[in-house]
Amino acid sequence: MQISVDKNILKLLQQGDEGIYRNIFHQLQPALVVYAKEYVLDTDMASNIVQEAFLKLWEKRNAIKIGTILNAYLYKSVRNLCLNYLRHLKVEDKYADKVQQLQLNFEALKDKSAERLLEAEIMERIQVAVDKMTPQCKRVFELSRFEGKSYKEIALELGIAEKTVENQMGKALKVARAELKEFLPITILLYNMWP
Image 1 (cartoon, rainbow, N blue to C red):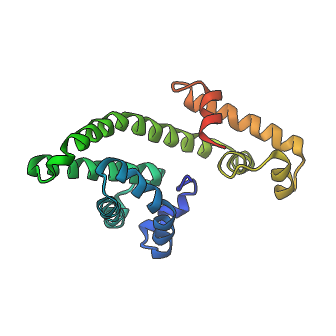
Image 2 (image 1 turned 60 degrees about the vertical axis):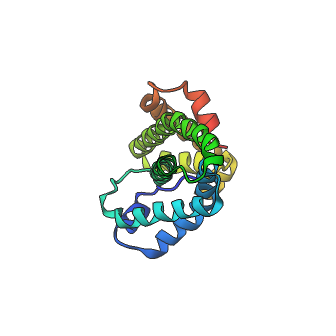
Image 3 (image 1 turned 180 degrees about the vertical axis):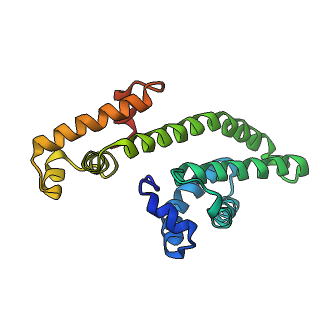
């Protein structure tokens, strides 16, 4: 699930809305713990790292730029905290039996960072493209790509013809192609990133 499609969520978080903060936590915390555990091999430590990432999110909420994809922000924060933890273990060498496995995980994590940063940049570009769309075009695109609704379902929800939905989606994809032209071919990108 992508959080921050709506800039109001980020604004409310920056204003200190604890309900929004709890909602983000409940939606993303389980996946972030699984992600962290892949590298630190310890569920409790993974959970602690994710808790620390959310604490930093809360403490630095006012410094987050509007348009930031919160998923990417939190994954990057967890990745950095995992790297710090692994460096700490390497220095202390407390867990000699785990060092080799942790070193492999450390290298894998470093290799995945470029991929995650690229994904975050693509998601930011998609948000820029969405922001350039007309209101109706934007709504059709969000319902289709972010909520997985069919053209028929969108037409019923918005009270417009299915052909209008199709036309608006065509316009939306044209804007997205223009914004993402330097990345992957748009057909691969759009069909692999959304259900």
